[in-house]
Image (tube, rainbow, N blue to C red; front, side):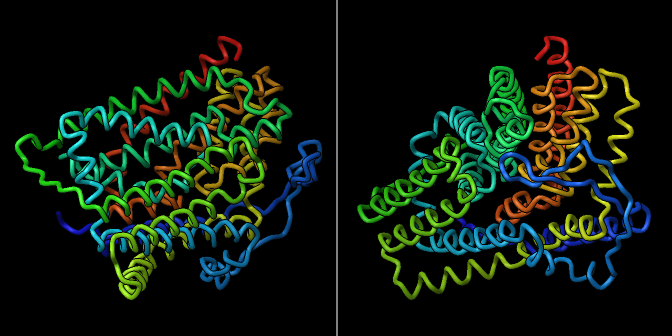
Length: 462
């Protein structure tokens, strides 16, 4: 088996760099066209700083200098909310280092061999199971960034079973994004949004579960159709697999410790104190699991250090892309035009017919997700504004929350401003344009289906 490199290919990196820089320049251009303004913010009962819709919006003097815009990819490290950016970067470096060690020591190949033997004649059952697993992680516990370490594994499984990288990314990255959007009991979107809107936590779960089933079936059909087109016959391929005692121990240790991390992520849905540190927990768990496995696989400490460092260096281009992507939000906030965009959107909403309001809310969240990938951050920004607008037109708060979840989740695996998408494509060595060329049809179909679900929700009084 060809060695799997967990790095960013040069061509993919340059193309992604051009796309993100173009978006940065476009955003900077907006600061000369859109006037600066701000909403008054107040502290809610939970101590969160949110927009106060009862107070007026005012235009203010604001601008970001060309020099600060140019340095914005670095300045984001010192801005408000920089902790999450730093956490993502450290998370990525650990993934790169550990996967390189696991690859070199042969454990990845050993694991793939064992899975291939078990599911050689049931590969489409495996596809359905993995897709459901990732969708459930996203929808039930709000896992998204935390699934990144598993994405390269699924990509390698897809290739081993005669499919391609895109199939593997669809089974993992696309699936977790879809699950995250359905938000059956996602604490980071639905949970936060319902608290801000004074709804019982995770209430209205039944209709979101119905949406989950619909989206899962559509995604499964989409993946099945693609995998059938690209599949290679593996029935006649000879797989030689000899169980090795030390590798079995290493694999058992790796999967057992990793399961502990996944369990912590699941528990975070019920233990709010864990929700702010789930990424840290997964990163530490993955680091411990990887180091333990490589030691049991008889890799020397010197080799572990060397290959871990090499894997970290290979991830450095992805860090630059993450910083550039986050600089777009930084520019909007520093120039004080983010609130102005929301103000204009609310003005438009007040002129629309009732049955288009819920779709317009969906559109607002889709647009804002381009600039602000964080679901909880968007909730604090948008929920105090869109819920009152929905209520004026007789649209239930519950349906408004569902539109918010849809708008936040699905586009996460489409926009080049999302770090998780950039990381996943990078470690899979897949070009962003190849991903868009393949996934846009599903995204379009998805928007139509979810829009239909929102309109159906209005009809049935959800």
